[in-house]
Length: 249
Image 1: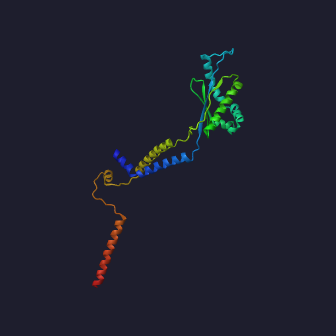
Image 2: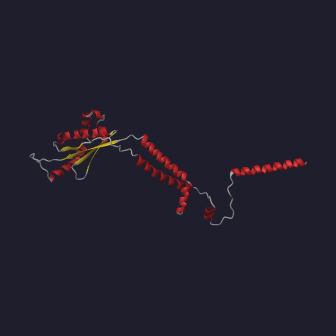
Image 3: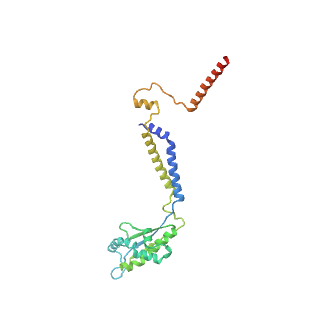
């Protein structure tokens, strides 16, 4: 099948393609603007830095940095444990969340070979997300000396909610564009499926191509209006003949 034939198939059922794309775009727009609850995100950073030697003298060497990096994995588990989050819930009851709910709303990441941990919280407003992540960071910083017997965690930067904060799960333009592409692909696939399942012959060329012999005659398509008009003409002629015969009699 040549490219021209593919284009003819698409052009023949262009209304299906338009309908698929329109439904996909309108559905994505309605979902994003009316049925999506916006979720906001806030971040705080903590640094793990043991800068004192055994005598309590400030020091900074490769050995202490490597030690700090190795304990970060343990800190990432501790910060999401009930020992920290239950205390956050008790200290900040205005957050309206218990330890389990806090665990579902925060995440901790760190870059390779870095002493910095990135703490992220989500919430229904930027203020709520920032308050949550700052509360967890402060409680974690205060509890590490109790749990690990070493004071080596410092809050590097707190989350600051701003009016320009945008929800992380609402992006109508991008979602509508994605829906447009998905709808277009589905529509094209559906059109070709219909064409594949349709085994009727609709033109002389298709008939000759299928049978391998030339067409000798063509029966043209007759519209209902033409058939109805032909019947009326025939009927009028018969009535006229009858009246003429009656008069002669």
